[in-house]
Image 1 (cartoon, rainbow, N blue to C red):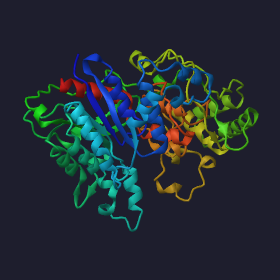
Image 2: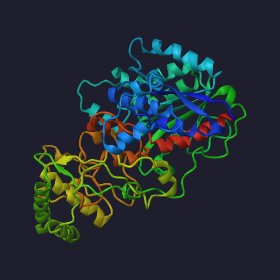
Image 3: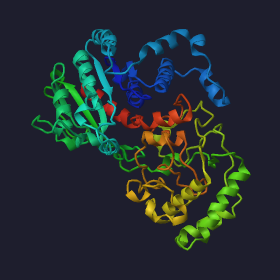
Length: 497
């Protein structure tokens, strides 16, 4: 049996990276175990602690399934299993990395992990990305007094480096947005500074790309080589992220890499592959909701679309059929077991839990009647033409009454996720509204549920997100896809022997 490695997870979010690494670590040949997770968000902390508690059992406790399957609140775990719950609370620490005193609080824990595991530790995590993301940079440009050098978010990665210096792990994995490659501060690109600091941290690290072969001469890979496309690795989502793997210099000597550490999957996974088996749900109305009111609002919108000369014939025909349909889905309950009949086998095994008899957190938002019309039009257009319409392609009577709608900044404002392709990137914006994440089935006429977003992010079906629905969406959008993290974890552990 191989030596066990301890995982330290920074900026952990709801635990996407940690879920992948801990799942890979269950293999007796490549044992890894989360020792510490650090996160600042209240609800993500609750999610992480619940998952840490569940992982302390060989099989999740029966009380977990009894509550979920019945739709009941979870029991008080501290009363039922005090030792396991105490361990979970100790493993998951709430703190703002970079705030005064937080590093000092963690330092003893880092030292203890390094000594207990004889240096066999792995550091993972992704510093917050708002300063690097294209959307964040666009917002910052609109601020008259914005100075990149004064934005502390550009330098949060240094807290990661600071902990890397202290822990001196055998390996680390740092994740961030694609925008890090082009972000500039202090007159130059931030990415080269990040790579320099990571390379020189602790005892020194060799930096390796995950999706392409490393340079044979041991030199640093090109910046673009650190970009990994999640859809090329079995994730049903076009999520492009910078992922940097570092191997401690003493372990990297003589290391031979014959190809990509995360080999591509033979075929991309589509939206329909992973959410097509879930129960069809109608949306709700933002105002007083009942089925008759919803159906009347939807039929009014469908009738207007079918009667418009601005609308392509293919969409008018579908809208006309919907305006007279009586088989619109009525259920909104999550207490229903998904049957993954058409899902690829490897993902069916990844998502499934035979003890789970309910589909968790699969409930819809309410929408205003005008948005029902826009969602219907967008979904019907996407079904007919294979891609979601730009805002300019909507008929005038469906255009939102926004002052800046003609600016071009919101061209994808009502975007349907095409059924036969990977989804666009699931982001935390999904917590604000569902306009960029419209379900591909025009008859459902709604945005994605938390569970559908979680499926696109490859969270297992028994993964429960804490907090109100808006906070659940936010956690899902901020996560690393666990299925990709699992592949990375196996590759990292394979290099460490």
